Length: 135
Image (cartoon, rainbow, N blue to C red; front, side):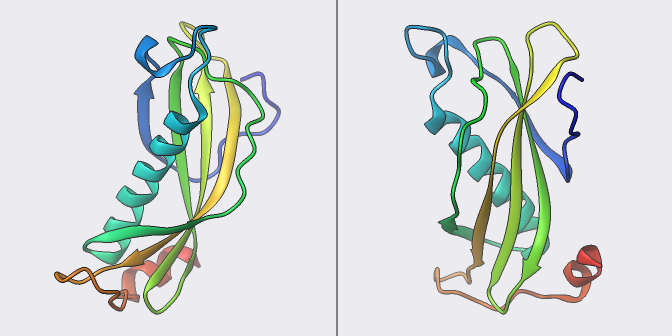
């Protein structure tokens, strides 16, 4: 790995950056990267909540490096906090450069998810197992 830092959290999603996700220069759209991060936050939060969740906030996101066509985007999630109905996660996006073991951090952000009931209303998060994972 060329980046001094290592990914933090649990590897939650890996996906390949394809030409349809890029601009004319071969850089992957930031919105596509953010969508993959949102998918990862949803996966992790749904596992914790044992049910349906939705994104309610994404705190500041700054892109430090581009993702190029052919890179594998690796998304890592870290559980930060569980509220009554919310789950706060730090999401890191790393690019594994095409055909190399080189990993570079692309961006990170804090995602806040809310647990929902069958009618789509906020519902309490069951905290027994989830609380243990924070400690």
